Length: 574
Ligand code: SRM
Ligand code: SF4
Image 1 (cartoon, rainbow, N blue to C red):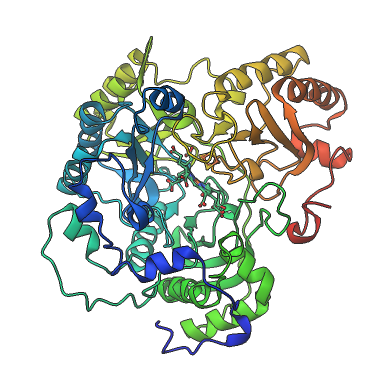
Image 2: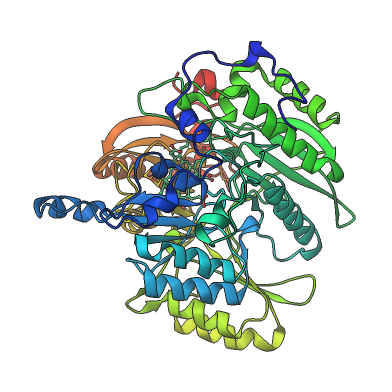
């Protein structure tokens, strides 16, 4: 689906000086840059010039620990440069052997020793120093994992609802997630050459779908199985909503143009829900995926990266024009959408039995950070389970873990290991299970306020408020994100905090529990204490005046505490 095949309609292209990232991609020799040379430069722990950006396309970010930055500067040392790696794991499925390999690498070769489950169903290593980077890729490669295109201006890790119970539809949806991921991967051999010592190839490669300058911005895709919206479709550029008939997946409704990020003070940026383009039968999924990507490739804004994502392209060119071009390029017409409904988002903790008679155990991992804590040896527990488990492990988009496909004969042994290592959720409140935060400090260079490290105590405070008002068993979808990029998906929460500065957040209210409504800003730049005081008042009212089973976000909309965000381009800031 190259641009020669489909001449670019100039009226939909933003004219002007291209962003610096466009030059970097264009000059990169299909993502090679001079990364290999940098790897042998031991004068710095980091990557220089363009390579700083290019390693992202290989799934890594250069970082340093912000907690120790000032101390090192005092000692006239450069920041402790290291990389964070994000793996490619479509649908979040990993085998026990793969788990053991990543567990060992994190233990032996990363500064923090943790495995961090992300909001997009994969894992990250934080704190890998330059001399260990090749070893890291080669270790992963040996067990069949790579990190190609998990960052950068490409299609990222493809998500798929973590539904272990209805195994037939899940297997089919998962196979589509894998196929879409592979179909949209960069074709360049740069990853193999640089990290796996692959054979050097002549650079006659072409990127038929992504284009040799890749996409204008990051691009995110999901396959979701209603009624569960665990992967949060509205955070994504492209979503395939699985439609099943008699227990078989037959096609998809296609939703395009979701995204949650914004920039403080810049009202041309806003979170946006995806639009429903209509229904296609399953055999057209790859063509439609490639067509949506290629329209965004050709029409997306390459001048201003702040307005470059698909959501802004749709706003600028119009949904109908975008959709018509996708139909033309894919050679299909969207039919009317098939009916479906989202009713839930959270993970279902504890044991469930699948239709195939196997068992599945979902364990709660606060913040997705797998590490051994005093009295809660999560990392040891997961590794011990992986040693005897014969099914697979599934990473959820809520940063939790499912031990899936447990043979009945192994159930008791796995239960015992999980219990002995603090992986069983008895005693964890509904509120804690419905809360989530992004990584933020100390590793994220863009963090403005704490998120992961603030979440546990913030949840305790909310638990106390719920108990004070006599509704301890209820919960609020509560999400904290350390800056407006929104990695913790606070812009789809009932209560969303967006970092503004140390200890200060923008306070958003009024999302719903299904992830279909964006919460509106209630107060700007307020302290943790002020947020709790407001929540005390609002939870008090909810406990008294809320209708039967009325969710907190719905209550706030009904009682006009905040107005609903209907069309975010128009009313998010109104
Ligand atoms: Fe994110 C950048 C972490 C999900 C929107 N995100 C970052 C970086 C890499 C910071 C950077 O650019 O240097 C963060 C690294 C922190 C660290 O130390 O690990 C980071 N994002 C994460 C993760 C790990 C959060 C988590 O706690 O799990 C998630 C990894 C996902 C993955 O496995 O691929 C993560 N990021 C998200 C999501 C949620 C989602 O996709 O469901 C979003 C909002 C949805 C969206 O894209 O609209 C998100 N991250 C961003 C953005 C804003 C993009 C934009 O449209 O402007 C950035 C900054 C950027 O791209 O310039 C960003
Ligand atoms: Fe970092 Fe901001 Fe993303 Fe949090 S939301 S991980 S602070 S970029």
